Image 1 (tube, rainbow, N blue to C red):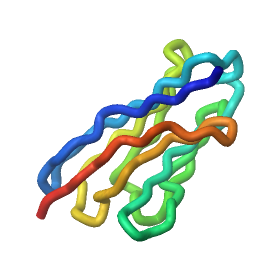
Image 2 (image 1 turned 90 degrees about the vertical axis):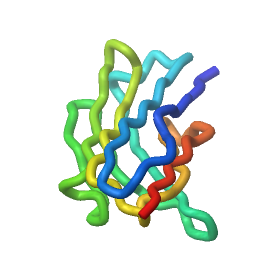
Image 3 (image 1 turned 180 degrees about the horizontal axis):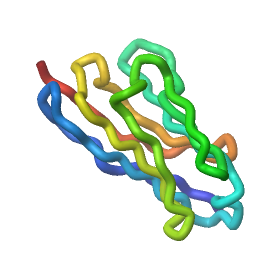
Image 4 (image 1 turned 30 degrees about the vertical axis):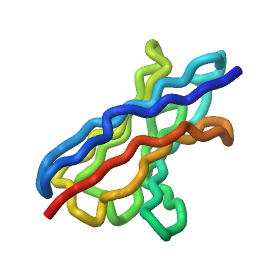
Length: 112
């Protein structure tokens, strides 16, 4: 059974950084599959934040370009999201997506 576990969220002040991790277990396809980070703020839809292909190509939502960096470590079946210059509007639950599956999410709260 494939499982996704996110971690690294927390409460920080505006301007701070956080690094999220998403560990994928139970799958033999990790290195050959694209992954994505999404986020959902209270009362809002879930939005794509960033994606990374199997060859390392990346794409970002406009609202995080230049601040967030997505990466992956295929040896560890782990995807990361380095979040810099955090803003209060980045407050949300962050989810990773893999093969249409979702993790439980990790809460990121940015205070002003």
